[in-house]
Amino acid sequence: MIAALTLAGLPTDRFLFAGFLPSKAKARADAIAEIAGVRATLVFYESGPRLADALAALADGLGQREAAVSREISKFHEETVTGSLGELADRYADHPPKGEIVIIVGPPAERVAATDDELDAALDEALKRMSPSRAAAEVAAALNVPRKRTYARALELSK
Image (cartoon, rainbow, N blue to C red; front, top):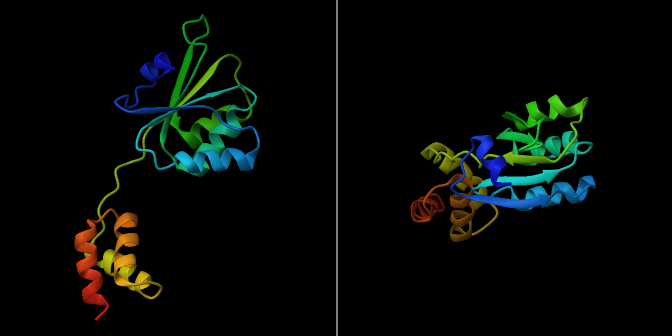
């Protein structure tokens, strides 16, 4: 795992080792959804025959994050391939590799704070369903906006 992290060229200041993903599609999607918000590089082990399916499931659950597939580390046929999750899934779809495989997925991109117009639109929608306090909390988390600012704006809009 540590050698694969080094070879991948992705951030290593914070990482989560998640082991093998479940083989069944529903369980795999649930496991991916559970760790999708983790702000760290993700590390998985996988077998050759399941690699393309795992990469496709990761792309569906995590988006087109940068990733690397390393195999046979410290052996004669060592290989590390980088690209987006979708590109890697396509690469291995018809030609599953052999050997010991590590998938490294980069952390999610930094979210950009929402504009005032986006904030107002989201608050208008949320205020139809809930109180200003709850609407502000939900929108602040979703749009990466400070809760205090969001709450003040929710109070203005609810008048």
